[in-house]
Length: 351
Image (cartoon, rainbow, N blue to C red):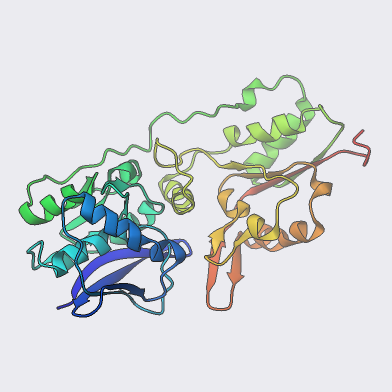
């Protein structure tokens, strides 16, 4: 009999709830994953096999088929290791449970059976706010991203802990502690700038009116120093903006240990950057620098050294505050509301 486990994947910046269907039938041993799995999901077969054995369980023999439904949605990331492993243990009768489909599981497994952190927990939490699941089980490493008040959160550390929780229900739900009013500090502050009164005045006006800035001057005149410190005089992010920016960084795997991103982003890509890296794209439609700078500052130093095509691509996102990327089988819209700062030298000889 097939077993269904609830899990999640991503489409652009949004989380999508999916079903991981596991079936073990008689026949020569095989392990097949269908339903448009990405490369990292195809590789999960070996991680899951080792994790089950090293956690003290028996890897089932037989014809194993994993279906990721809906089958027409591309599945990416390593977050399906845990639901696949749990489905195999239940389908092989090593665990007896009848309401597993009322829980949602995500997580990457190490070969030893430990749960490792994954990208994109925050969008999943946002998606779950209006869903009625008994338990949401995820890696403990991602607990710093929890911002919702819920009684069904279970951050765990290993496959064994997940099995014990499902079998015995012997753990209390974890309650996150989140405060938007915690200290917000910038390593580089605008108050540190001495002199430059005219350009400081111009940047203050740009910050108050959300205007773009173009600076030119000889090397060492302070262009980069001023651009780096502009985020410190911008208004603080409100709750909705914190969620919006943190969701982008969560899916990109750029959130740090302190959790949500409460400071205004500052991005300064090198002048050799490609078009896809600047605006986003690729086979899995990842965000680019303009979306990572959302609600913050995008600084292009040595502006005239950038490829002309890359500069031309900035026209639409600067005007519309978003960028739409189309591929053969997919289409995504990424936010890009940032203050643009360009800097260059007056002469090609850099003087």
